[in-house]
Every structure is written in C-alpha cells, then in structure tokens.
Length: 120
Image (cartoon, rainbow, N blue to C red; front, side, top):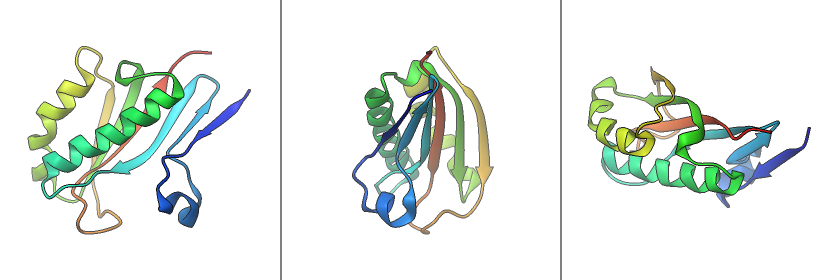
C-alpha cells in the first residue's frame, strides 16, 4: 500500500509534526482544519476551502467524504454553519459528529476533520 502525504504549507505542519492530509489505501484522512475570519461562518467557509484543496490534491472532492467531525467550543455556534455545510456536501452527506471542546486558540470557533474514500 502506498502512502501519500499532502502538505498545505502551514508553518505548524513542521512545528507540530503533521501534514494536512494522508492518502493511504484509497482512504484520504484530512487533519483537523481551522479557518480564518471573525465569525464562525467565515471560519467554517475558510476551513472548508482548505479541506477542499487537500481533497483535490488527493484526487477526490466533497462527494467522496464519508465521515466528518466538527469541533466547536460553543455548541450554539454550530447551527449558523449548517447552510455552509449543506452547500459543501450537497446530495452526498457524510456520517457526522459534533464535539464541544476547547480549540488550540480561543480565536478559533470551529475545527473540521474529514475522511474520504477515493477507491483503490
């Protein structure tokens, strides 16, 4: 089985020792991704944009996502993200989990992690 690592160029990849995504055996594992912006909606859109770039580099797209985990420090901020998430996943919604937790920096309102299957 070949393994492909996808880097986004974030300085934290080297500092922390991770990459944006790993492709292994047809599976694409995208690391938890935060976005930029002042509101949870802006951060959600930004995170999804970064995830989309990683998925494209892996040879797949949002239709191939089979699992998504949303992490937010405030559960009340999840609902404002729903239209953005529906637009991204459309007719191909993945299995999903939402977790309430602290994130690495208080400025972040949402972190999104996905797993996709692109086949062998």
